[in-house]
Image 1 (cartoon, rainbow, N blue to C red):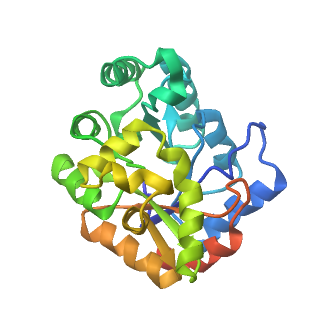
Image 2: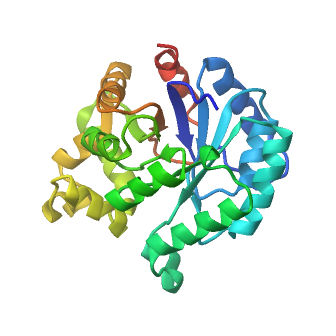
Length: 283
């Protein structure tokens, strides 16, 4: 499965329709033509949501980024994966995540054990480890991504986390961090956009605990995020600023960068920004 150097991470292409609406179909075809290697479909999508985008294109890989194991039974996912792999071999990557207690509610118990049980079910159903990745942040889940999947797709991370993740994964397993980009040369305005985006994630302990492990403090979470936190998590500025941040992740051990363009409305397709960043996918 060839992901290329850079993919696009977005919830804006997600649809529950059995066929992609015209704007989504056109956007997927353009991303493929622009040279991006993968689409990471955000918003806890199911396998069927990925199928819609695969059927609207000809060669780009589509990954779930990230399918919550609480919302999609393993037996259902395995059956859908088997059908999709048969119809479009080599074009679907199953991204799995354990989500967060506040998002899941009372069902959220023993997250690591739950993920291991879920992977056991996928193994028994014949889903290859080479066709799935884990949204791993901490050492235990990164080790599981190394041992029981093709690798890791960490979300809301810094290049320092990418370095630490590579140390756990070792050589070989895929490391495909999500990279947040705000294309705005007005730094303060760009930071405001970043804070608006980050405010939701700062309510989720899996993310804040990971940031604490990276050396940030509770003070960095106040007011939507300190400048130090914002500048570490987001690349803010022009295309060259995005290029520098992506390069930092590659230097730290990444194999693929899943770039999320941050805009005021996550449901709007940021076509102009995707076009501006496209030359980076061809380097």
